[in-house]
Image (cartoon, rainbow, N blue to C red; front, side, top):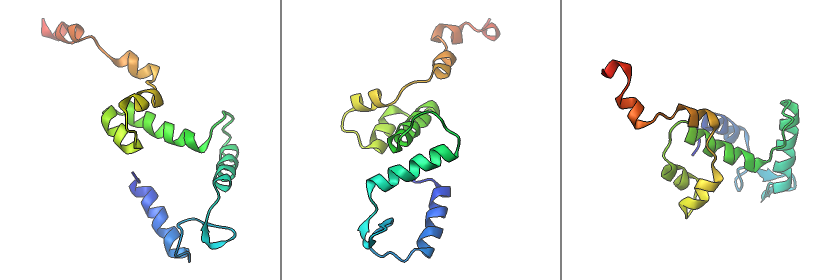
Length: 118
């Protein structure tokens, strides 16, 4: 899933890029893909430049994406599909529920017996 804003940035990049084989070619030439380690190093530099002291990896972005979707109320089955998990159990382990969301849950009985319902 690619956001509209990310798509616009990517579109500009594609116009300025001269690579015909890979979206992100290696520094070794346009016929080789970027190295995983290069991506990790760029992410690490960006993390430090942003002043983020907590340890994070590129995979943390995937986890954060899933967590934000869950916090916004996206059904776990949709998140499972977006992440490409075969089992819902994998998605359940992968995402965590924030404390603030758990505190917002009301008992069905409380919703029925609210003061305006008397």
